Image: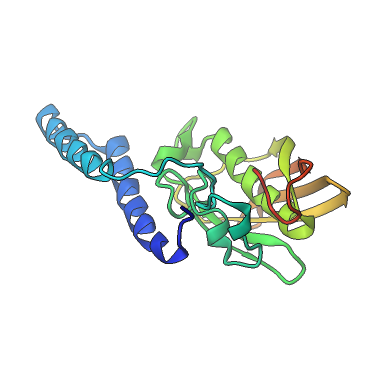
Length: 213
């Protein structure tokens, strides 16, 4: 069954709770006995959640049919369970975004301890690419219908720090028929951290305005 938007708030609260657990796993230095106690409690929570499970199909919107998809809906509902942007996905970074009147996707992303890479307090490049895939893809989608990622290239110019709100923007650069090229940037203050270019192709038969990726 499709997920009713009114039912998503508990998912968001649950995801926030799991984020706190994930952070604890990363930073905790408690004794082995305390870790064993935490594992037992997590196992209890897992058993509660496993009492009822959806058989899928799974789509990052939470919907199970294109018929229920609405491109004009709140952006949060388009990427509810995305590992890059989803507020109901406990492993996604905290993201705030909007689409401007000229169809630029912009906002901030804040990376946490579970997203770190080398050397210290910096975000892993693969996580940055994951976020780019969604925001650049979203720009292609709201700009001209979008599609699935065919190619994504990123220039990493400066290390991207954890814990800081990183400003981003993405926009449609060009499109023709089923092909779309979109670009994006991430900034910390006046410093350009990285930029990206993505090619997205709408599969044949996919309704225009529906992104498969």
